[in-house]
Length: 36
Image (tube, rainbow, N blue to C red; front, side):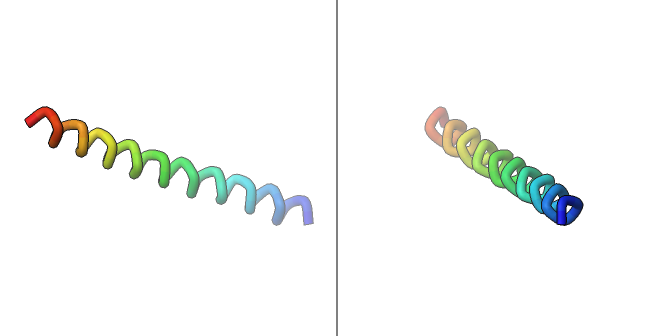
């Protein structure tokens, strides 16, 4: 159970990081649109 739980935790963290990167890119994209 601990192994599955640990894998689930790392999987959730990587998914969160991916979402954070995507939202950061969107934020930068909107920022560039504001500039031009």
